[in-house]
Amino acid sequence: MKEIPVSKRNLIIAVILAVFIAIGILVIENWPLHTEQDSAASTNEDSLVSAAAVNAIEKVFQVDYQEGKEAWLERICEVSTPAGCELFSAGADRMWEFSLTG
Image 1 (cartoon, rainbow, N blue to C red):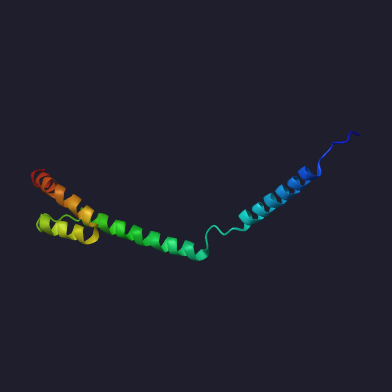
Image 2 (cartoon, rainbow, N blue to C red; image 1 turned 60 degrees about the vertical axis):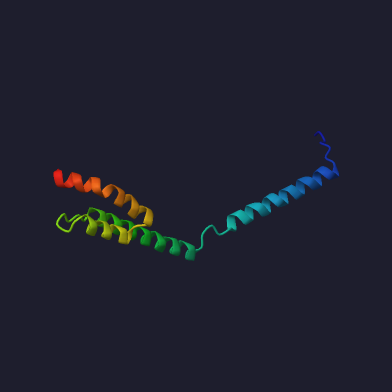
């Protein structure tokens, strides 16, 4: 059998490196990615956002032409952001013209 010469310095570096790798693996395996509380809060927040989005979409498609454009816009602006309200207000005249002639 042939001897492989390993210096004391290289042996110490190899042992230290092995220890650091082992500690790193243990830390990564045991690191909590999400706690139960974070997950529950996220799910609750997602449900609220989904409900708000559905509510806003329903308001957009609840068009009563007898009520008029202003009542329709008021319902939309109650459940939307200022930017969303402005967007619908800017396009409302064109939509209302199309719906009355179409």
